[in-house]
Length: 333
Image 1 (cartoon, helix red, strand yellow):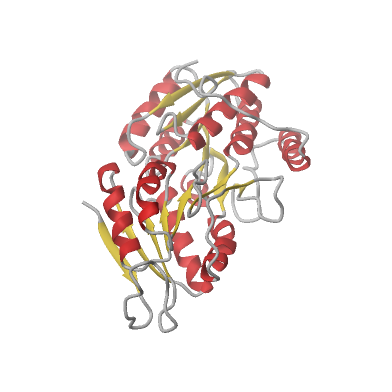
Image 2: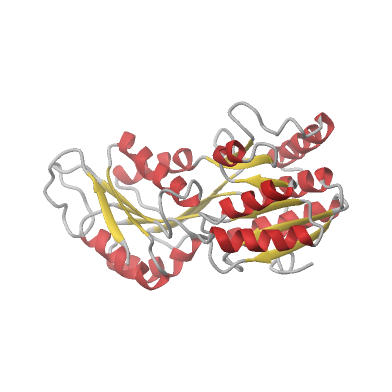
């Protein structure tokens, strides 16, 4: 069962049911989250998006724990109550938005980490998982002592997961490592992720990566306990396992959403897909960081750090483009 949380700073009359804001009512934005805002990972990032929209003049609300079955109802609820922006914080919301959006032509529906837009009012915003998966693949291969590295993911087949897992395999393999990819059923289940990670470690994989939500903590904990290396999704992962974590993909969703929020407030809706990366400065969507002002764990040799940074520059110039396939992201070796 999902719950709605509203954060209003003034008493408002409801906006018109078609999604437009009147002169007396600031625009409103809502986000639907698949998990809890306290996961220190994906859902916490979604909450940070929402809070950043306050600076753009929006009243905000959110719902946690949205299941697949509840997506359509939750989208309709917010759009029907006059929210001008309704965000689904996962690529899996795209199908429900495709069904709901035609009934609310004045609402901007946005998928975080989607892979397409649907005209006129369903857009996707994301960062280039292929670029960052490739960087982690190179780093993992260079830091492995056994020559065996692994990725642990959820939502097999979702485009952004395919992009990151597939590019991890491509670039780690090119750098000489043997790669295993494994999928878990629940992005939020830290215990199951830890069990899966321990199995990967037992099979000789000494550098792990992954893209999970609350379950990311289980992956990091397994690496910490067994003394192997891992990559994280927030600086908290480095603080919790400073010896194990090599770097984190730190996502900057507020920067990606700010321009869209201003456009919607001006009455401009879009049905596009915008993907940020090293080739879209100044907003790159994400960056590698171990701690504030520090890109990598001190254990990463300077030569390896330089090689990863060189790859970043190749992405920035357009000299390197990675296009993973479903086969690249397959489970197993």
